[in-house]
Image 1 (cartoon, one colour):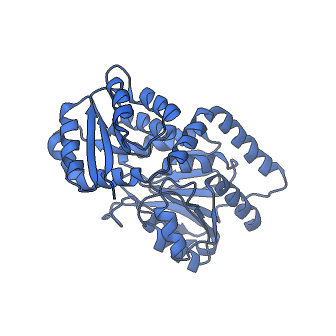
Image 2 (tube, one colour):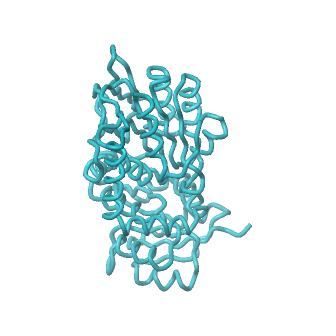
Image 3 (cartoon, rainbow, N blue to C red):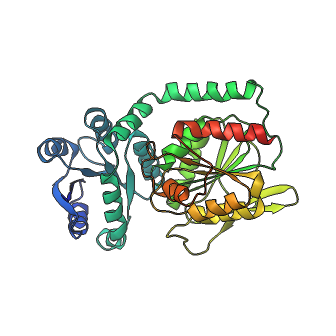
Length: 363
C-alpha cells in the first residue's frame, strides 16, 4: 500500500520541523514537502500532488482561510488545520471547518517543540483519518458553505413550515434529544439545528472539542439557528427550544428532579479518551429519560457513545445514526449500527426531519 503523502504549510520553521519529524516517524506517512506561505504551497500542490495538507491559520501573503477557500473551490482535498487555542483561533478554525477542512490540530501557546510532541499520536491519527475522506464529500461541503445564506433561509422556512403543518410540538420538558458527534461534527450539528423549529424538545450535545472552542462553537450556533444555544452550566434546566453544548473540559450528564430534567457537569477522567464523552451523556440519558429520549449519533472518529446508545435503546429510546455517505468519518455512527443500537440510519440532511417526526408523534 502506498504511503500517505503530506504537505505541511506553516510560516513557523519550528512547527514545520516538528510536524515533519512526527509524521515521518510513522511508516504509513511520507512528508513530501513543506511551504512557509500559501503562494509557495499552491505551486507545491501542483508539483507534488499530496493526499493531505496541514495548514496554518495565520500566514504571510495570504491567510489560511482565503487559501482554503481557493483550494476547496479549485482542487478539493483533505486539510487538517493547525490552530491556536484561543478565542480568535477557535473562531477561525470553526470557519475553516465550515469551508471543508476535515479536522484541526491545536498549536500550544508555549514550549511548542516539547508540547506538540505530546500530541504525536493524535496528529498522526488525524492525518491518517483525513486521507480517507472522500474529495467529493469535501467539494459538497464547500458548495454548502458557499450558499450558506440561502441554506439558512431555506432551513428556517422548512422548520416553520413543519411547525405550521399540523405538527404538534412539545411545550413541556418531558422529552430530550441527545446528540453525540466528533470529527466533522461541528458542521453536522449545525445542519441538524438549522432544520429545527424554535419549540423543539430540549437538546443536549456532546461534541469532542477543546474547552477554548466549545464556548465560541455554542455562540456560533446561537447566532446561526432558530434555537437558543449555549454552553451547558451545572444545574441548567433542559427546556424546549434550547440546546446545551458540553464544555470542552467537562462531562455533560442529564439528571432528573421531579418532572424536570437538568444538566450536570462532572470533571472526571476521560472516557474512551474523551472529555466530554458521548458515552457518559448517553448513559445518563438512558438511566433518567429512557423512553422519553431520542439519541442521535453523528459523524465522528472512534466508537465513543456506541454502547451508551445501545443502553438508550434498551431503555426505550428511539435512536438515529447518520449514514456513511454523508459522514466525514463513519466511526461512531458505524459502531452504533454494528451494535444494533439504532432504529434508523439516514443522510445528514434528513436527521432534523427525524427529530421533528419524533417530537410530533411523542406529544
